[in-house]
Length: 347
Length: 97
Image (cartoon, rainbow over all chains, first blue to last red; front, side, top):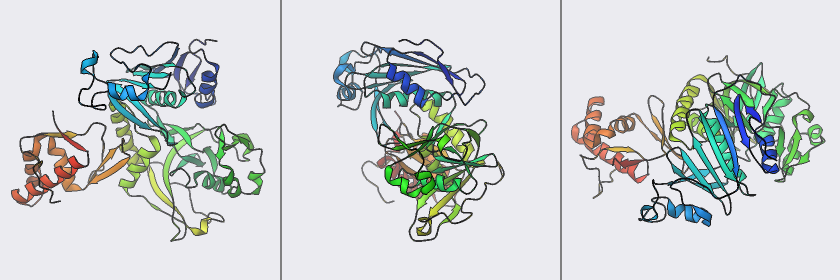
C-alpha cells in the first residue's frame, strides 16, 4: 500500500508520506501521529519517501558495506586519504548521534544532508528552509535512524523535544528531567496523588515561541520492578507489555485525567542523594544549561543548533530551574509539599 | 595551567571553536558543550574574555585580558597561552584554517 500526502500533520507541519511498508506506517502512527494536538497550519513540510534501491545521493558512495564503508568514505575518519581518490564531488564528514536510550548511530554529513547506512538499508535526510526530505530503504534496523531524521526535521521546523516527565497544576507545567533509572516515572506517579496531572511520562515537544508543551507519550511505561513503587491501586491497573519488555499503561487507565498540553514554567532536575532528606533547591545556571541540552538533545545541523541555542538562552532566563534531591525519606513516599506550584510565568 | 610546550599557541594563529561545539553565554561565564563526547566545560570571566578574542589569535586575547582586568601583559600572555593550550587539548578549540 502506498499512502500519498498529506497523511497527517505533526503540530501543524504537514507530513507527506510515500510509503510501501505497513510497519513503517504503524511506526509513524505510534511515534508521530497525535491527532489530539490540533494547531494552526505551519509552513514547514516533511516529506517521507520509501525507496527500493540503494541510496542515490550525489557524491556519496556508502554502498552496501554499511558503517565501516561509510567511515572510510568520510574524510578524516578512515585515514589520511579521505575521499579524494574515489571521485566524490564533496567531502562527507562522520557524525555520531547518541540517542536517549543509549543507541549510537554513525552518520555521514555534507552540508545540510545526512546519510546513515545499515546492513541493507539507509536513511537520507536533506534539510531546507521550508521543509525536510527523508528518503529511506526499509529494513528492520531502520527505525532508530528514521527517528533521528524525523526528530531533526521537527527541530528544523522550530520545535524542541523534551525528554522529561511532565506534571501540570493550575495550567502550568513542571518538567522533571533525570538520567534513565533515577525515578522520573515513579516521582510522576507519586505527584499524581498530590493534585498534579500528567502531561508526559518521558517525551513532549515544546513550541519555544509560546512555551507550550505538547505531551507525546500514550501512557506510562515502567520496567516490571517499578510496579512495586507505584502503589497498590495503580499496580493493579491493566498494564500491558511493550515490545521492548517494558510495562505500559494507557493514560485512560491511570486514574488521573491527562492534560495534553500546558505552558512550561519550571524544569526540575531529579537526583538521588542518600546523605540528606528530600528537598527542593535552586539549580545553578551552569547546571541548568546541562539539563536543558540533555533533555532536548543536540541537533545534527549547525544551523538548527544555533537556533536551538538561542531558545536555550531564552529558556534559561524565563523558566525556573530547580533540583529535587530524593533522600532516603523518599523511598516510602515523597514528603508533603515537596514540589509546590511554580512561580508565576516569567516571575 | 602551566602547560607551555612546543605546541604552545603561536601569536599569529587565530582560533575557532571545534566543529560541533555548542557555546551558551550565561553573561558572567561561558558553557561549552561537546555533543560528540557528551562533555560540558565552563569558562569563568577570564576564560570568557579570552574565548571572545580568539578569532584574532593570542595577541588579541592578551589585549582583551589587559583591557578587561588589572594585570600586566606578561601575566595576560601566560594566562591566555595556558587557557588556549587547555582548550586545544580538550578538543574545544582548533586553529583557524
